[in-house]
Image (cartoon, rainbow over all chains, first blue to last red; front, side, top):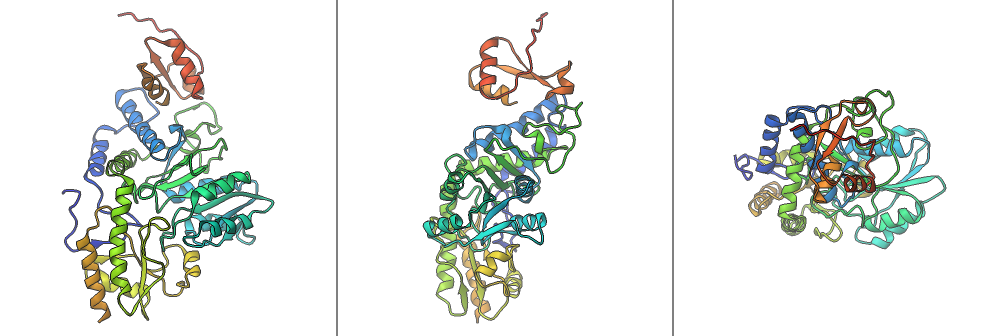
Length: 388
Length: 62
C-alpha cells in the first residue's frame, strides 16, 4: 500500500484526533523495528540491545533538534500527550500553588487540575482574544497572583484552531519567574515550535497527530533545571541497586520497557515532516481549509465560528454546524457519505462554553498533508446534499 | 548514547559497552570506550554536563 493509499470509501477529516494515513516511511520504520530492535534498550550489552538503545537515542536527538532543545536526554518518551501533561502539572503543583490556563483548554489539562483539588480550583482562566496578542497576554498577566507557579496553555485550540501567542506568553511567564508549559497537541509538526525562542520549559506533544507517528507514543520535553517527581516508578536499567528512582532524565520519568516500535515510527514521522517542511505542510493544510471555508460561508444554513483560517492566528481547522441540527447528527449524515469528521465536544468543554456551542457541539474538519482538493470537494458536495 | 553522539560530533570515535564493575549497580550500567583523545573526550563529556564516574585503562591484547 502506498502512503497515499486510502480506503475508497473514506474521506478522512479527523486528523486533529489522529492523522491518517501514515507515511510509508513510518510504517516501514515500525516494521523494521519489530524485526531488528526486539530487545530492551538500556538494559543489556549484547548487540541487539545496544542497537535498540541507539535507535531510541536517535529519536531523542531528532526530537531535541526538531523542537530546538539542547539536551536529547531531556526528551522523555511517554504514552501520549495527556500523560506528559499529567506528569508536569502534578509535579509542578505537588507542594501547592496555582496555574494560569486559557479559556480554551482541553480536558488533558483541565481534568488533572481538577483532580489535584476538586473543590478548590488551583487554576485561573485567562480569556483568549483571537488574533489579538496584546489583549491575550494582558488577560494572562491579570491572572498572575501570589502563589502562581506556572502558565500552562495549548498552542492552538483543538476545536476552533485559535492560536495562542506562545512566544509572548513565555516571555510573560519568565518575567514573573513562572514556568511555561505548552500543550502542543494540535500544532507539533504543523506550526513551528522553538523551545528556546518561545521560552518553553515543558513541552507536551503526541506522536500520533501531526508528527505522523503511531498511537501510543508521545513526548515530554524538559527545557529547564526544575526536576519533576516521577508519577510512577520502576525499572530503568540504571542505579539498579537503589530503591530511589534515579534523578537523571530521561530515566527519572521513564520506568519500564519503552514503546520502541512507536518510538521508531515517531522518529520516521518527524523525519517525514522535516523533509516535507513544516511551513509547506501548514500552507497546504491551510489552503484546503480555506477552500472548505469559502464554500461553507457562501451557504445559508451553515454556522461558522471563526474567520477564514489564517496561519498567523489559527491552526488549519474549521468548526461548523448546520443550523438547527446538533453536530452529531450532521457527522452521522456525513459518515453515510463516507466522510469522517469529529462532532460533539472534542474533550474541550471550556472552548465550547466560550463559543456558546456547549449544547450542540460542532462538526470539526481537520486536514493532514494527505488531504486533497478532491477530498474537500467531496465534503462540500455532501454538505450541499444535507442542506437541500 | 548521548556521550557517544557528542564525541562523534567532535571527531572522536567511541563505542558503548556494558560495564562489569560497580557501575552496574550505581550508575547507568554502561561505559564509553575510546581508543584515543582520552583527556579531550573527558573534557567534552564533563562540559556537556555528562556525569563521568571514573576512567579505566583497558589492555588491548590483540
